[in-house]
Image (cartoon, rainbow, N blue to C red; front, side, top):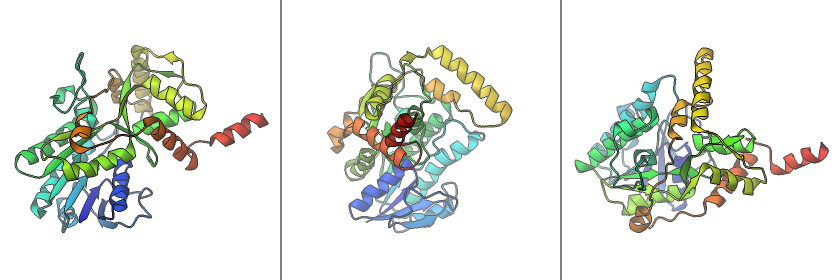
Length: 340
């Protein structure tokens, strides 16, 4: 069975590739000529070059393919060109779905986001049955993922074999870029997080998210959404977990949201004047206003999805960042402390 994976050089996509290869399956990856392929450069995959915005290249990419895992997404909370996010996430999704349909692909797994589900609902944990609206999506990334998910569900309603998975917040090794969540971990490791906000996320090991994609391809029902989630944790709890792993001290000060918002406005204004990307994207600040907690019980019940220890996944992430030179190792930091 031949599988096409888009976004294979990304965090989740590279783990999907590795999981497929571990099962002995044939993997083709769609990459742009300019893509950085560190995450998969040594893996035995077939590379086809194209772009989600180029329908002709997609028709070639899906030729002879049995399953498509459309994992690719422009995951940024800020862009100088907002249109590029929609072109990649919405138009690109429509294009790959059309190409898969024309090629007679047996199954398409579309990687959406928990952002399309985890909207604020008083006294209720959102789940796959939660109906959110575009107006509830904060920022271009979330809005684009919402619109792209609608494309996938519309295709399924028309008879296409499309299943949607909604990963929560994956953590673990090989977050090369890194993702916005990876940046939180790195900020903690670099001592750049003196305070925290009263917010929260559902964390899940990235390896389990990859396995969840394969389970969705095998057991998922067309037109259905499946949250691939783990544990709901406040940011304070996440930082305390990282403190246990690293021996560092977790921040003790909770920053009022109004202060964070004001700081974000100032930093974004400075970034605009200097013509650079803001270090504190306002979309990220706005997202932090409510906890993105969800009820993720459906995928375990219907797909057999199992999420392992999040603390172990965070430890793997920390070790990977140390081993790949993003931060000093704990042994090196200890040696500096002794020398001082």
